[in-house]
Structures are given as C-alpha cells and as structure tokens.
Image (cartoon, rainbow, N blue to C red; front, side):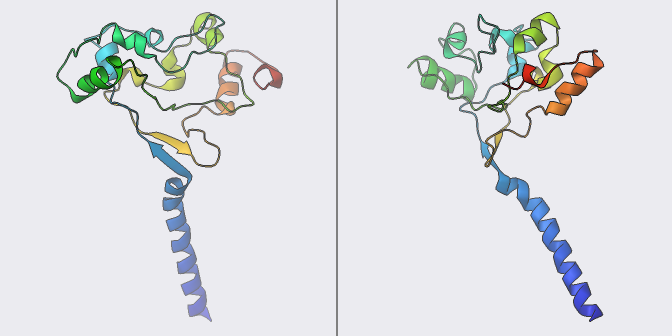
Length: 179
C-alpha cells in the first residue's frame, strides 16, 4: 500500500513538472519578425534617433503603431551597410515599396483603451518605463503569442498601471481605461 502511494506521488510530481515545462510551449506560439532590426545602430552612438522617429502618434494622440516603410526609405534607398538585414530591407521592401509585416509585441485587449499621448507628452514618461530598453537592443526577439487570448506575455498588467498611477497620486475610474 505504501509503495503504491510512493509510486503514485512520484508519477504525479513528475507529471506536474513536465506539464510546468511544456505549458509555455503549448500555450504560446512564436513568430519571427520579417527582418532583423538593430535598434542600437539607430538610437545609440552611431545614430541619434528617438523612439518617436519611427513609433509615432497620430494627430489625435493615439499610437500609430509599427513603423511604416516611408520612414525607412528616406535613408535606405540603397544599402548603407554590408549586413544581410540591410540588403533584405532594400531589396525586399524599399525597392518594391512593400511594407514589412511587423509582428506586434504588445496589443491591448479589446476592452481596454490606453492613450499614449498623455503619458508621453503630458506626464513625460519615457518609453523605456513600460517597454524596457528596446532602444539598446541589437536584434529583435521572436514574438510570443498566447494561442488562446492572442495577447503577448509582455503586455502590461492592469496592476502595473494602477500601481504607477497611485505612486503619482492619481486615481481614476474603471471607465477611464475600459470602454
């Protein structure tokens, strides 16, 4: 009887461990970006671009999303370097005028509204506060997408937003963000 319980407990523990290791692989799919992009070259010592040079806001203050090709083609009408990514950008996207189909790392739930403009312009919060040090990255990481919710695991949680607002003495109604 005792041996049977030990075997069951060991099998159960192994099953839980295996499930814990396999769950992220089953729950999330991975997608590569259409081409390699080095943020550091554009924003670091060699370049002086700011986040809003590519990731802009619309006239109404809402986030315009991923960079558009016309922002790249001004400088990259011809290859500026020797990298495979540079050659691919020019030959596969700039010359034929084809937009890269960038994968989104962060996407808001349909029931949430996050206005970037008041946070960036009025509160002067840096992009790195929420999005991390992407401006220093040399390569784009694969995008993880939850197979059930279709959201990324890097999306900010509501608790993060509430904690930030409270630390600044701001209180809001649920309807300020949830429409």
